[in-house]
Amino acid sequence: KQEVTQIPAALSVPEGENLVLNCSFTDSAIYNLQWFRQDPGKGLTSLLLIQSSQREQTSGRLNASLDKSSGRSTLYIAASQPGDSATYLCAVNAGNNRKLIWGLGTSLAVNP
Amino acid sequence: DGGITQSPKYLFRKEGQNVTLSCEQNLNHDAMYWYRQDPGQGLRLIYYSQIVNDFQKGDIAEGYSVSREKKESFPLTVTSAQKNPTAFYLCASKTSSSGGNTIYFGEGSWLTVV
View 1 (cartoon, one colour):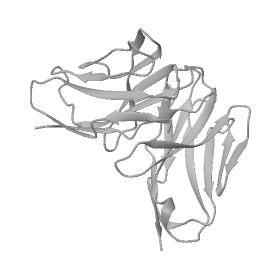
View 2 (view 1 turned 180 degrees about the vertical axis):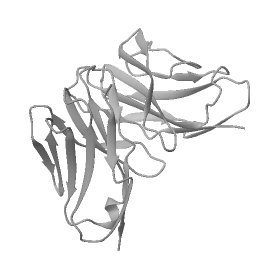
View 3 (view 1 turned 60 degrees about the horizontal axis):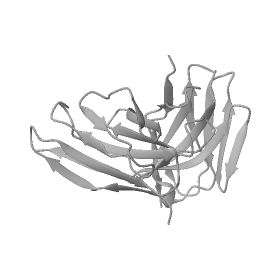
């Protein structure tokens, strides 16, 4: 059974720091992995989608990597800003196309 | 603007009542989903639909019902059989149910039982 774990559960950093959020999954037979952002009381916004054949994806200050063999993905945020404060979730598409397996998220606070 | 609209944003339900949450998308997506989000738990899939007039149960379908009469609309009814309905409900859609596409979410609906 696929399980997705995100560490740490919460993170507080000063503005300007580069930071890494981690996502691990137990079954390497994935179709793709996605990172999302969720602001309090809001819906989710897709940040990056990495197909199983890809190693990384970049969008602005965000870079996501995927290592299927080790069951890990990282989301790198460069030069963090207070506006980056949110919960970041990762979800694995395990090939059963209807269903994403979700982590619990990392709650990020970037302090001015 | 293209997107997913959920309504109402906040809803209060009395014990024993059925309530319906609306989800409308103008993205021309075939696949639509309903998730429930509770504190300390990951998103859980309630129902999903891959095409008009067809839908399947997710992991926690008991106490819920859906319909998919139009491509744009996927309403969720929370029935009185759902024993713990207080939660944040999220509707989502994708171009198709095949795995390579990004999934888009609405802004969510808060349901509280009073």
